Length: 205
Image (cartoon, rainbow, N blue to C red):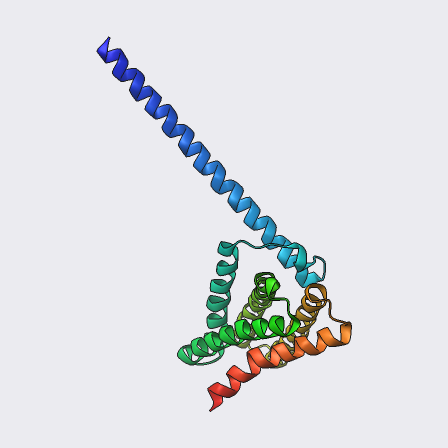
């Protein structure tokens, strides 16, 4: 009788353990599905579809985008300049991005949109940065294959990516902060100058 009781307890333990494992896997699968769904919604902003006002990002999602931004930025800068200088420039860009977003929202008295605004911008920057990384890789491949006008093609694609980036930021400002078209374009260009221009000037000193 005692042996049967022990077996019953052991069987119960295994059943509960399996249930816990199934719950854990299901929970993480649900979290992963939700994160992917949110990412796709944010990426659609790059194609001027979703409104970032309607997207509420969790903290884990926000910080993952910041980490990806730092990593991808350092990779791109490392390909075109000294890795140490490139890493410092990316860190300065990140600081300027957070500061500029905060300054804009304080001026507009819309601080409650801080997480939504910076997340939308960082996801968009990560998307463009990924394309920039692919462009840089393609440029090096064209150089290895001795393709003529490789530099012109790379610069042209880079210019298009910058214009696309400014258009995305303008769209985000227009949707989230309800700017007019002209104001959103001006703010997007100003944001680009502040977050990219100032760190570049600092590195040239």
